Length: 84
Image 1 (cartoon, rainbow, N blue to C red):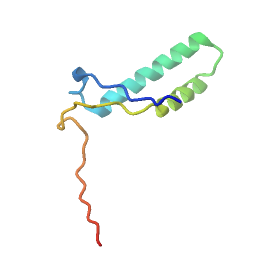
Image 2 (image 1 turned 90 degrees about the horizontal axis):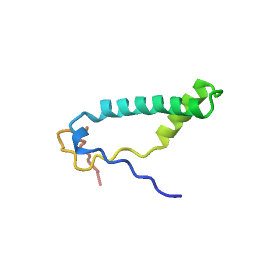
Image 3 (image 1 turned 180 degrees about the vertical axis):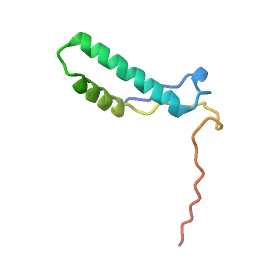
Image 4 (image 1 turned 135 degrees about the horizontal axis):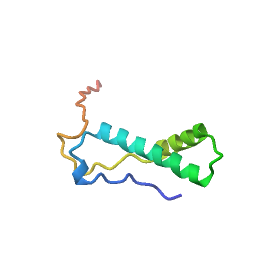
């Protein structure tokens, strides 16, 4: 099976905070999935379409923010100490 890679976030969108950007993209994908599936098979229940779309979104790899400035990344500093 071919390994899927995350789609690279274009530089123009890297200034936007990742969480709202992802939420917007997810909402648009779900909207598209319902409209597209409705065209293919209008008899499928909306709940079935939404569940299938959500499962597909969850299976996608995370986006690639390579090249994004550190100021824009959602980073967390963690201190760790390993005792001998």
